[in-house]
Length: 237
Image (cartoon, rainbow, N blue to C red; front, side):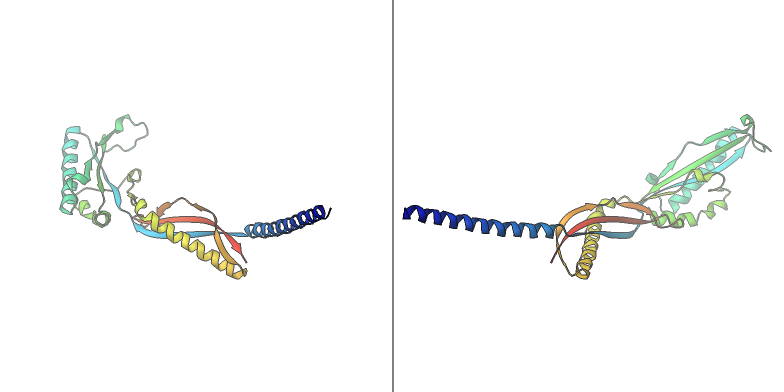
């Protein structure tokens, strides 16, 4: 009888200890769960100005005339003059493309008035180069072509815009992402300090898309490269 009572007492003691341990574990779990309910979401920005590394420059002009054969000779001579100007300035043959000219017969245009010339020819010489600084310099010097009777950039040349590109995005991505993430952490640390908390581990993080835009309309060859990262940090006491 005494043995049975002793066994029951021991069993009861074990059950009591188990319940105490379970209670402690539940309290710890609740505290831990509550701590993980506290977090802060921050954004990290990285923005850089980069020089474009590729340019496509269409050099456009128009020539009028009434005889196609004579027009062909004139266009050919002016194209050669443009090419000579480019090569003398440092542009290579590989960077120059001579586009097929387009011809408008004004006699077939019902809305054309004051037809001084029957034919209007549009000629385009295109420069595709990675030497952006040189091309920008040459654009300011194209007045030298005006002096030779080649009115480049006149008429509807808006249809042939100069295009500047930044193609080395993959080269700058790692450093920019690192800087954006660092900026996000600094913002999170400031928030944690102000709320009398400590910064915990990262809960989630997402990298925004990179954007490449012109810095402004006057200097389209200077690009604004931008990325924003979103990071969620846990907060703890």
